[in-house]
Length: 183
Image (cartoon, rainbow, N blue to C red; front, side, top):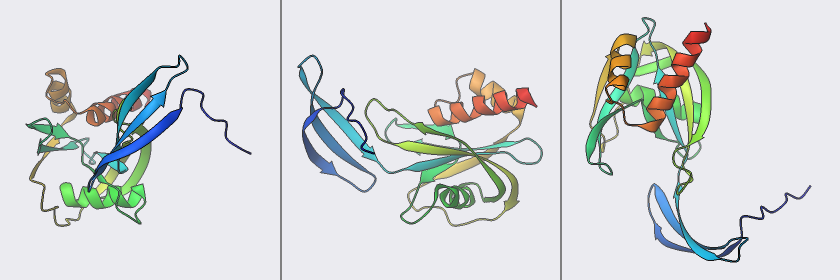
């Protein structure tokens, strides 16, 4: 069966002005149904994972790290890029060990989400990690992160006060609240 072409997707030309380690930039000339031709810049991004890690006491682990693009230290759930040959589940387990020094006994897929579909292909597979045990792997040499475990009340206050600005972390937090409301 042949997939029907999306009538809104009519790329006349694509150029790649930048190819990097994590991202490539593609500039498309797109013809719209109105006949208008416009440029669209697309950041091609490697797949990523993010993990909401909860311990047996209900504590949630966040990492605080400097993010060059926004020039801030921000709180986030642990996350990382899927490496060649890894499944998202393998990446999630590895990243938890590198970033918070814990290995999950259970992982449940929460969702797949696009971080900012207006300009990037980045897709993040999110997991809920529980049954955590101590298991540390070396951190990446370009990361300096601080790990903090938040109680449910502390995390609620942090979110309410605007202390979490990261979209994937907010999505995971609100997913957890909805899940706990159903229990």
